[in-house]
Each structure stands twice: as structure tokens, then as C-alpha cells.
Length: 326
Image (cartoon, rainbow, N blue to C red; front, side, top):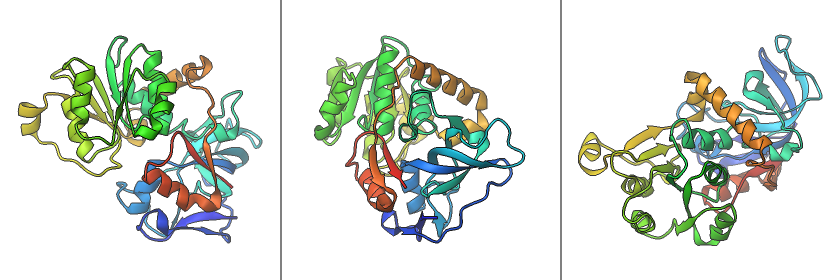
């Protein structure tokens, strides 16, 4: 079969298509799917640069999320049969391929009325957005939330969800993406590329700041996020660092930014707090049934163009979901 192999930790440029990879056999607890669409996530970029904690070492087959048809299951797997259409994640990689073996426990059925190509994001972006807003961010109706990278896959979902729950949404995005975010229902849109982001938020909130920040950028933006949150009661949920690492000290929290900082890693949430993750997924399927999270056509790249897809995502030159199609 064909697959994308990461040769070094030099980033997307060192990802290449190979055509002589054996089709994997499902190991204990696994299912084998014929990949119809593989999700492109910031995790893939982090792994390609060696910044993902505990990530695979090159050379490795890339990709953590894939949707498609089950073609085989391990003897110890029950409840899944060949012919079923599922979406699954495997942090060890291998999703950017014609076939992928995935842990059966980390799969869910494709929702009714959805095509396989719509499903990537349902086990990464969607639960991340919902967990950041609800069980961790404690968002309530009438509160205000600042959503960074609002035109991205996770950001768009967060905007839809936050509006559904009655929040006022301030969306940060580059100017070319402002209309996309407004169309999702954002109440205010600010320029993520301009300096003084926290000042812009304060102007929109009459100097009060926001109740919640969904922080997925890092770098210098992290400081702006802390400054944009309300003192004492404001929450900053951190789940990404595409612009690099940022530091925060106990002195900062006592004397500069008296806010609540919460870290979110969806893989750790699944492992260490499965009851919370289960509740999030239950709520997510309720949102899907209610039409709050509809199937949305992604930007599609052929499998061979995977390096370009990852590079475009890293450069923040895309909007919405990105998938690779074999």
C-alpha cells in the first residue's frame, strides 16, 4: 500500500510518499480500515518536528486520525464488523495511508447522514473544543469567550458551540478569514495578526475582559490571552502551542495575571479522566443530532500532497478542516 513516511524530525518537508508498505494486520484490540479520509491535525506537525511529548521517532508512518470502512478485526474485538464505517485515532501513527490499523476502543461510528470525508475531527478537534468550553472552561450562558484561531478546524467548532450555549464570542483570526468567522455567528472579530490583542478585547468588553479564553496559539499570544481574561474569575484553557512555548511563573499569577490557567491534552483526558471524556462525547453526539455540529465539507488534498497540506496548516494558510484522501 501507499503511505506517508516521516524520515526525520525536520517538519513537513521531510514527509514523503512511499508505495511499498505492507498492509498492516490488526493486532490485539485493533481494527483495520480502508482509509477514505485522514484528518490533518497540529499533532501531526508537532510529531514531525519532535515537539510532541512521547511522539514516534523517525522513520515512522504519519497520521493519527482516519475514517473509512472496516475490512478486518482482531479476534478479541467485539461490536465491530467488516463493512462498518468508523472514525478512529491512533497516536502511534499510520493514518496517512491506504489502510490503517486503529485501536478499536478509540473508534466511533460515522454519524448517520455523514460521509466518511466529513468525520475527521470528531475524535480530536470536536472533543477538544467542547471540553475546553464546558467541563474545563465552565462556560455559561451570558458569558464572553475569546477564541483564538477561530477559522481553523477546532476554532470553527468552538464558535458554533459557544453560540449554542448562549455565549458572546470574540473571535481572533487573520483579516482574510474574518468573513468566514462572522458567518459562523461570532459577535466580534479581531485581527489576530495585529499587536495589542488584549487591548482590543478590553475595548470590546468595556475594560472587563473575557470569562474564558481558548488558547491554542502560544508564543507571544499566550501573554495576550492572560491579559485578556477577567481578574480572579477568568479562565484560560491551553490546548495548543503552534507559535511556540511561553513561560508563566508563580510571580506572574500572584502579581500580574490573577487568572485560572487550565491545561488540556485530549489524549490525557481520555486516559486519566475517561468519565469526563465520555460525557463530552455524549454531549457532542447530542449537538450533532441537534444540527449544532453539522457535516462540513473539508479542504481535500490527495495523499501524495500530504507534505503541502501540513505545511499549509503550519503556516495558518487554511480554514476549517483539512483531510487527505488516498
